[in-house]
Picture 1 (cartoon, rainbow, N blue to C red):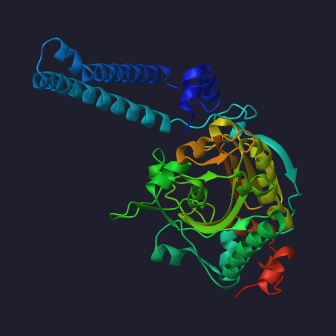
Picture 2: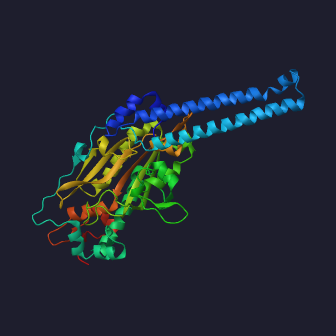
Picture 3: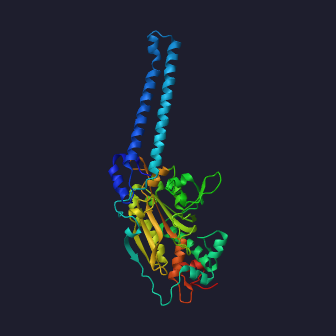
Length: 433
């Protein structure tokens, strides 16, 4: 969440930055709530000061002729009346502070200076492209037709088992899906020094508040019925980033200026806002797998860490020989918690378009403030908020889609990139089962 001190000291900056997102900051409501809070605090402090004065009046009353018992009784009576007023003032202050906290939790992160203003993906800025899309001398099939042609993809069975937006994979496609996960994990661990981490697939509401998924985006989540208050994770970002919740790291914890985690999990999303979009195949599903990168860094490392993390995700696409482009998202297309985001979009021949396969984001101290995730700066000994980052490296299902469509041959078989062949026991082509 935003720093309330920054909102108070520089509301014009907050208003200006949020306009990049198309969000109008309600300064009137915030100012009104903050003024009420200040008044309640002043009243409480005044009553506390008065209580201190009254508590010391026993001796003065005795000097004025009161007996010891009468003096104590008089003071106790006055204190009882004052305590009631003080309790009311404290209750009022707490209620107003709760309103302020709720108000601030609904405000998205402030975009970085480098983020372009805009309202949709049409306003995103392409940074560069890598690789040349293939040309085919035969009719291109999409991944669904290719998977069904192999006999390895079954959406009807998935619908029978669960419903729409699910898939069942067999044989070669199931093995390729698994191979992708292992390849991605191995590369990030061996080449870029990430630590593998295994986490729960169920999280509590505190974890989702920490990363910014709650309270604003509850409709996008699957909540488990029962008394435990569990949710299925929408991405590994939630449990992995919450490893830092309520912690103070020491400088020695930040080997090479940061902590790097890589994690494979299934992900579960209701896709509440995507009705009618990408209903065919594996592009947008309720359950899918990702290999996620999370970094925890000191503030001064944030910007550089984003460039590095994004390049790590790009290395997977390059190793798989998949054409893609890197895009800087505009304010209106960024996620709620993001300060700056790059999207990597892979080329899908059947759509003749680039489609998102990874989002790599810097959150600044936005999540850390919600999670109370801090470190002790050795230069001044002060405890400071860390900065958090994450990115998909990659979304496994969409990578599988890209491999099918870019690797298709005229006879319906699929070429396997050289980097994956060791994970496929030497198989270089998928053919009909």
